[in-house]
Amino acid sequence: MNPDLNHLLAGLGTGLCGGALSGLFGVGGGIVMVPLLAVVLGLDQHRAQGATLAAMLLPTGLPAVIQYHRRGVRTSLRLVGILVLAFLFGIYGGARVANRIPSEPLRWGYAAFLVLLAVMTYVRREPAPVDRAMTPLDPPMGFWSSGLPIGLLAGIVSGLTGLGGAVVVIPLLAWRFRMTQHEAQLTSLAMLLPPIGLPGVYVYAKAQGGLPWMVIAGVAVGFAAGALAGARVATRMRGAKLKQIYAGIVLLMALLVALRGR
Image 1: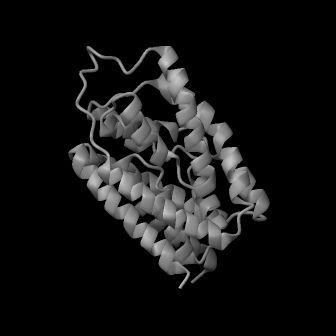
Image 2 (image 1 turned 90 degrees about the vertical axis):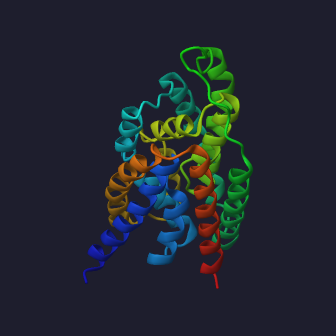
């Protein structure tokens, strides 16, 4: 089989898995895509992370965002804008640091981070439902004072790990703004509509001498289709159930990353 076609198909399958995860849980899909790109195509940790960030440059989460809106889930565009602004600075710094870490320590650090994330997700309690007609998310200054550090931290984590930053955004939004799981997931997906990963992609592409663009094209197409399907399922499930499934998948991916080095 033509190597380019092989890479395109492998990227497509990886993107479908990542997109389904993104639609279901509001994350960027990197939790699945980074390990799969490494296992299926043999990419090292740096190139797998860079390729995942590059695939997110297109508004691949748009079908999922539309689906959430159709089901009556809402968020604040002002908050999304503040999160994105801070994220752009954080991802550049995180990517610079990641490309100074050797591949093996970076891989093990990534696996350890996934284990920590799974545990934190499982023990986190769903906030009590809030009537948004009576209780708005927060006044504008509350968005700035809380949104900037949340977005900055999410960007740093994204640059370091190749994830979309939702692993930080979703739990912190639920805690700070008393968002439900669905509200926090929609906010995270809305952050992915502009090309927020561009600074990180630039750093990875420059440091690694380019990225596998044919793979990235397949990932982007598959991600859009998978995100729509995942969102349709997510809006019909309880937030607590989503959280438990998500924690299990993250642990599975941590195991896959750890076993890849054997």
